[in-house]
Image 1 (tube, rainbow, N blue to C red):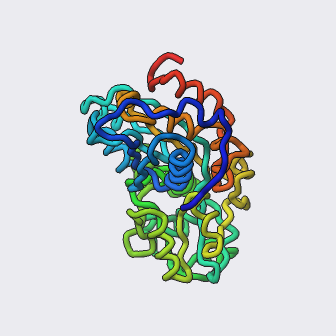
Image 2: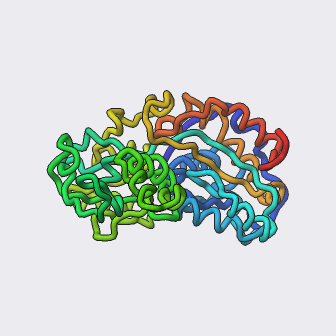
Image 3: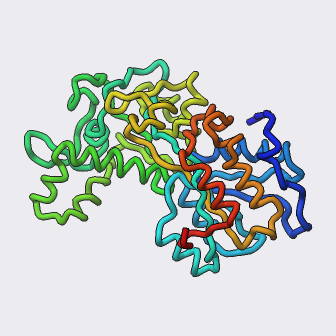
Amino acid sequence: MSVKFSVSALAIAAVSATAAAARDNVQVAGSSTVLPYASIVAEAFGENTDFPTPVIESGGSSSGLKRFCEGVGENTIDIANSSRPIREGEVAACAEAGVTDIIEVRIGYDGIVFASQQSGPAFDAFVPSDIYNAIGAKVMKDGALVDNDFQNWSEFNADLPDAEIAMFIPGTKHGTREVFEEQVLLAGCEATGAMEAMVAGGMSEDDAEDACLDVRQDGKSVDIDGDYTETLARIDANTNGIGVFGLAFYENNTDKLKVATMSGIEPTTDTIASGEYPVSRPLFFYVKKAHIGVIPGLKEYAQFFISDDLAGANGPLANYGLVSDPELAKTQQMVADEKIMGADM
């Protein structure tokens, strides 16, 4: 990705190289949703400062946080990108490995979108119950909870195409999967009455919630463990395929994809910022405080990323789908103060 733009003196202040270290570039891994933003920032950081361009890898939120929590030292990454908040279990794993001081940085918001081939059928009537009926393991039919054998979308919603169900969803290591489960699958399970039927059948509410997140295993729903490019490749090969993407990836591939509405709302920066679009989430990166002052440019990269010039409403990241955080100034101050998670604000 080649992105060139000028940034103000404010955004690049205090960026002279620090004392030599065993490793002289910032290393980042994690969320494929945050990847395009981080790549833009890394390139701009390398071009506009005296520091080397950071190395940005993908792999998914869970994978990035697992690497982040491996320990402290030059052979471990400095930052984990994530499209979900870090979990308590991950914080505990970090602490066990000596990563005790973590700075959580919220960069803005993103929407989870459903998109299909440009030449395929139009999906412009989705509600969460449709996604659940398409791929949930157990669904309601004639008032009874049964194994899902729906074949076409039109079987449960006449406003959807009479097309074969073929969904490509994020694998379990992706932060997108967690948001997809909570805001789409669980909401759809409740809306169809499936969750109520599970509880009536003797399940506890917790067990019923877990069961709502189970997806069918007959090939109608396929987990994608790679990044969004793999999902795009699957859709390229399947006219009826529907994929789950971050807004930024979709906006960079509008020549190949057309987006579906959810509850009548098209996902855009405006509808996400206003809260109209129902499937959105905050995006983060996590900084290993112990590496600040050891790995040259680490704090400067974090500050550069969330500067008004990049992450603000009129910054270049907004052009790629990032919705600016209304509390960006608060985050900027927190990073400047190196405020760690759990510290009194």
